[in-house]
Length: 337
Length: 272
Image 1 (cartoon, helix red, strand yellow):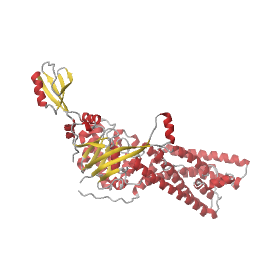
Image 2: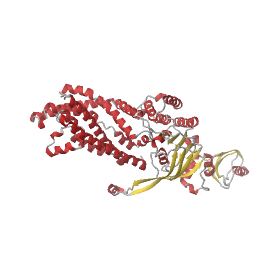
Image 3: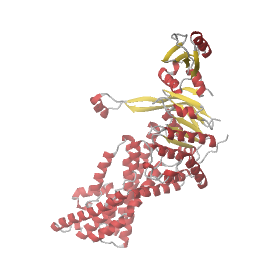
Image 4: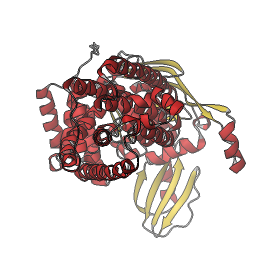
């Protein structure tokens, strides 16, 4: 039974139409015309308990709007939505007990209070039993090294420290589900790794269901076994990273080290992308020519000492999907179940 | 897997905790706290000079004697320590920063959260009345009214506080639509300073104007408790005066409820 389920979820925002120029600014003081824009057009998805899903898409694709509907603070224009058996916007407070939320851009800690006191406040808000609270805090301090700044007011924390605090805050009440909205934004490599480690641990130890929204695909590669790709308010891909590579990463690169000089590299379905001394990068379309065929063709013409195959970066694949749009792809993938 | 559905029931603990944290938070701004007391002392001193100068020309207008006006002024300024705290300004700040959504993602009533936070701030600032009063007593003689008047004053002060709190709450909620309600706030504050009787007793307004300002809701904030204190509202008038305050409180509480509902609706439809 899925813990999160949406069907044809849609959210339309109404905004005031703006007119260009200074005259337009004056005009918009007195007249009001509205434009409707669907931030989420049609999102159908289902997640099982314990899944760790990357929810990605370009800016303005509708990621945050979806998350807000899942948290119950935004009412969908149409469609169905169930989170842990509840309709979030009808049972906002009950739903709030089941979820934890981390926003990379906004803290939910209390700005003027030491971190410790923010945690105590959250304990009271969620009615966390004392022993559970102590055990959780001890565990989180261990993974996130919170002890060194437990007594520091939140406003004096560095971004990395604050984010660590925010993660602990979101997990104190043992939520079944956590929504992470760009949790690693602006962090240095070390802090990023600490956060990723924490997400992986929590997911594994507690079976917490995680939806991770991010622009840093390294987060996704490190953590998620499933990606939901959204563009213009629609799900354009839903499946494993491997499937994404297979379906969209049609080009690979063969890197050849030449033993002797060789000049001609015009092989079928292959493009010479880079040549650096005796190192040659050949990009080939693996739907048309196999690596084995290409290597044989190269060795027939040149003497080589080494070969390797470079898989396309996830980032390149996703960039291609954003740029070209999903409908132009060779075969539109059916969403996996 | 079976999911146990949690049932939401009201718990007081989070709100007590919010009030405590607000109290602690205000206390961390020590400099602000001390300048607050300092500026109050200065204002008492200046107002005393002003009234002494004015009364030297004109004896007891409206039957308010010099000792009464000085008492009125000092008590008004001491009350302002609490009444000038805009306990729900956080709503405005959170709307501007876009962080209000996180409060709606918690299993609490955000309105009650803002109220408890305001209460915590009030208590901290309320404590400042004691040292301010002691310093004020060194400069000015303050009348102490009979116990009945003192009791009526206390009740009236609490009612005035609540009217003021709800008025501010309504103003702060305007920011749900405009994002910025500082201008509205400023206008209301000016009106309230002048028309509530904080600076000069409303009895000093001439003729018809006096009738009007006494009928406005601002009078329920400072004027009513102060006039009870200095005896310008006699014991026979207590019940009526307090009932008028209760009436205004109900009006603003109703307005606050309507505005808050609409604000919530706007938030869930239009996003935070």
